[in-house]
Amino acid sequence: MSKHNLKEKYGLCSFNGSLRNFLYFTPLLLIMSINLWNGVTMKLSVLETVLYILSMLCVGFIEEIIFRGFLFKALYNDNVKLAIVISSVTFGIGHIVNLLNGKDLIPTLLQVCYAIAIGFLFTIIFYKGKSLLPCIIAHSFVNSSSVFAVENSSMKFHIISSAVLCIISLSYALWILKKTKQFDEYENNDRR
Image (cartoon, rainbow, N blue to C red; front, side, top):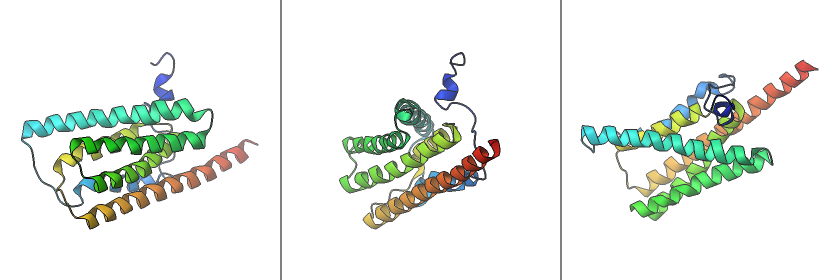
């Protein structure tokens, strides 16, 4: 992988952006805490919990590699904007499979919506920061912390939390785009 710079190409390298322009990832921490907003509980045995967390860490890693590392990078050279949209939308739509796990329709559709928004944010972080590591960490934490989530069947809670996730994700992504564009323009003017 190192010989052909594949680690850098697919984002398995250190973050290459201004932490200040990325607000020190503070909005990402809010997103990471979503499963804890309604409280914390132990639903499984310790061994089952550890195995669940390990499997969810792998899922977060693999999904980031597939949707941001491979898919986004495969489309990136043709049209960056389209690559961002396709990567985000396919990531979100992929969550429809939760219906096969017995999840209810409306909460799953809401999950698809906020997964598209979070996918957009993760793609922007990768595009502008050149690293998947913040995305992998955040995604893996969200997945892993779901084992501790207190289920809330209230439709109002699902709608509000989904809207908050969308607002945070999209606002943060737009902030990053604005700040990094200003930085890019400053760098380009400095080189002239």
